[in-house]
Length: 157
Image 1 (tube, one colour):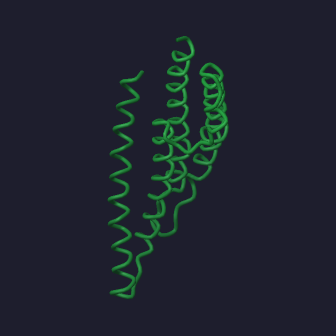
Image 2 (cartoon, one colour):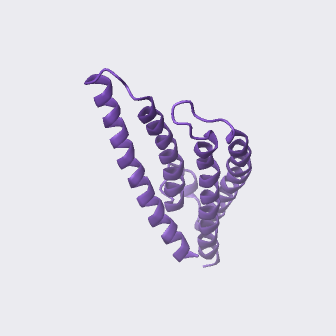
């Protein structure tokens, strides 16, 4: 499972890097067309916005998987190791339940209902944009399971 996690990590790293590069291109193009040619491009603006949404969702899942997300652990960190680990396991469980109910199920419903609506400037179905919520939810659940396994091993030691 650790090997699969490592491959997903590398994929998400590169995917986010590519998104930032493409976003930089679109935003630069948008600035040039707006200020030099006085004719802003609606397509580049929409694509940059949608890529930013994807970067946020996939980057958030990646950071969650690395366990480098922001948390308030000052009380938890003062607990004994077994209690601290149990609290972390409960936290991972709650996050996984949230990801399943809100991100995966809710994201699927939103994605499927928005497939008939297209963005006016790009004609891309909005369901493709909303799919990032569901996919990042799946990634968060996967990372949560990996974290639970690590914490379970830590608890048994």
